[in-house]
Every structure is written in structure tokens, then in C-alpha cells.
Image (cartoon, rainbow, N blue to C red; front, top):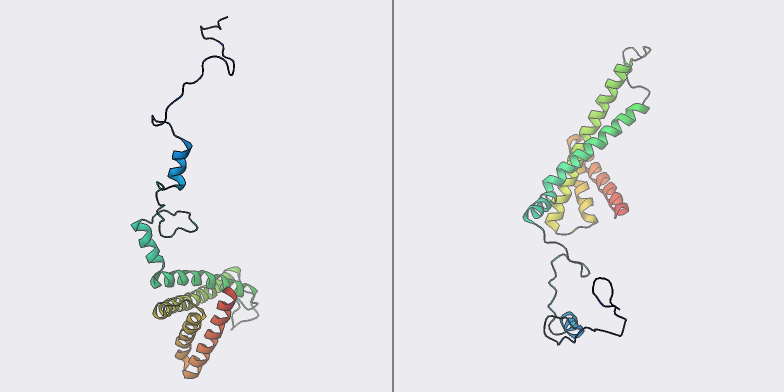
Length: 199
């Protein structure tokens, strides 16, 4: 009995079967696939520099390489530290002014209660003063550490200690030799402690 549409019904194992296709006319055989995967015909995998554990990474463009060189330069690190120090110093100055009970008071008339405008003005001045100081110290320390690291060709705790001594000494020497020596030692010790805990 013919099925609707004129096609005959086929039962598995009965009726027309697929004709035998000889090798070499476009079909993929298991042995050929294995030959290309693990055999002599396998092409060596080209590893891109920077690949880790066989995972390929895309080749960096010239723009990406330029940006990496800029971000690794001492000037960029100094500017970044300067901006970060300015923000941190400003926040610290406003915080210390907020907990200071003498903010806004006039030394000539301490009995007079300061206005909100005077308190905010005093807080802003203290915040700006702290921000400038932190920005200068941050830029000096970051630039000095980058230069010391470039000169030594190593990245270890000694860079922080040397740059801390140079920065502290440069700031302290404005008040004399003794202050410069104390500043050098103090900044070097502080840098060593911070570097120890960060690493």
C-alpha cells in the first residue's frame, strides 16, 4: 500500500538503504580526523606571547601598547598620586575640621558663637591646606619611587624605603639638617611598614 504523496513506507532494516560511499569522495573518516588532530598532519599551535596555560590572548594593538607605556611612566604615576593625595588630603582635612571644637571661632573674641558660614569657610580652608600637602607628598614619593625602581631595575621593599627617605628628607631639610634627618628616618620607617603590610 502506498503512503500519501506517493512515497513508500520504509521499515528499519527493510527497503532502500543508503548506498556504500567509497573513501575519497568528500566524506570525513575517523582515521583522517585523528590524523589531523594527533597525527603527523597536525599543525603546530602558534602561541601568542602572553598566552598562559595554552589559553591564547589577542595580540595587542599599537594603541594599547602606547597606553601601557604611558600608564607605566613615572610622570603618569606622579600625576595619579598627586590627584589621589589631593582628594585624600581634602577629605582628611574636612574630617579633622569637623571634629575640632575650635573651628570658626575668632581668637580675638572667643566668646562669640561662630556662624555656619564661618565654620564652613574654616573647614574649606583646612581641607584645601591638607589637600595641597598630601598632593605634594604623594607626587614626590611616587615619582621618586618610580625613578629609584627604574635605576635599580628591581621591585622590592628597598625602593619604598629609599624613596621615603628622599621624600622625608627633602621636606624636612627646609627646617634644617636635624629636621631633614628625622624626616628621612621617619618617612623611611613608615614606608617600610606600609610596604610590608601591602605586600
